[in-house]
Image (cartoon, rainbow, N blue to C red; front, top):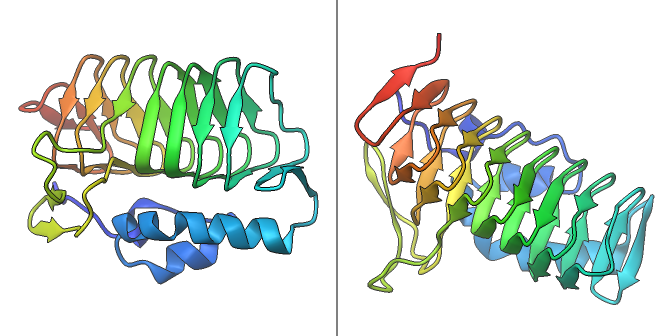
Length: 220
């Protein structure tokens, strides 16, 4: 089973305001250092169908924001996204359309493509989540190693990210089970599902079911 890590192998980015960025980065962790600058540019330039919620927060049409959510910019929230009570968005966040940012979920320095769901008690830090990716309740994207050293992506080769913080890279359609921990620098391929209570580390192929670290089967 091939472990793919390149941006074009993991994502079909059709979101107009994100597509040039995705096309410019060979590897997805290269996106992480560019999120804040892109968010600031989109806010400064404005987009049709979007309005400023605050000086550094741009939201699309039909975005739902409850009074108990906290949003710190720079931040761009795509059309039709639902933010639920207690959500905490704390800067350098860009979403596509139709996402769900759930109750008590926390996001920072991350990109969510279209229709991503992080509906219950999730943490997403320094991460990229592909179209229709889903986090089960309590699943977290851990972004900092215990030793504080730079994160290395360990697949069929080792990739030096030169970044101290790298969370999860979830390909389009990835589905993470409840209360799973995605350790720093983990890559999950397209349409791969992960059992609940799994500790993920390394690179996982596309179109698979991850039952445990040692048991990975091809999806039939």
